[in-house]
Figure 1 (cartoon, one colour):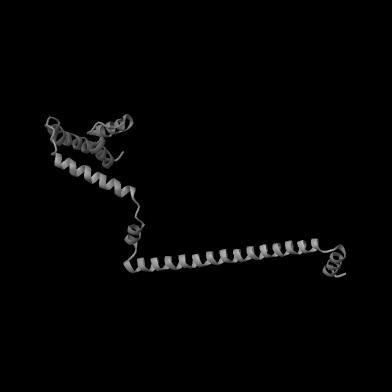
Figure 2 (cartoon, one colour):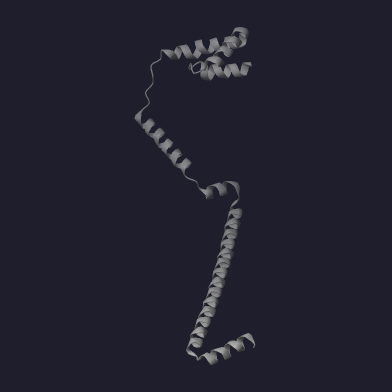
Length: 161
């Protein structure tokens, strides 16, 4: 390990005794070789850590805790909400937002017209299909009311014979 890494570990994990055994072993080896890091550790322990070990804990006023809880709740709400407008606004100038909204309105308008046109055409096709089926049903009903000779005459006219 390099001196910078060792000093970071001393400041963060070593002082709080939150260092795993493997890292502690590497650090102790480095400290036994490097006088600068060893002096850094001793100065930190004697100048900051030891005087604070016997200090009485400070109690924060209730008003401070109220402010802290309120801030945490506000941040949690902000994290749980997704505001696409704020996201877009943070990347684009105001005129670009207006242009983007206008483009969305146009796209939605064209899409709506396209869908309405397709639905209208499908309705017309279905109506034409039903009309053809009704005409065929009426023609069959008329044929069933005719005498056989007339039916044969109509049939021969249809097939061209």
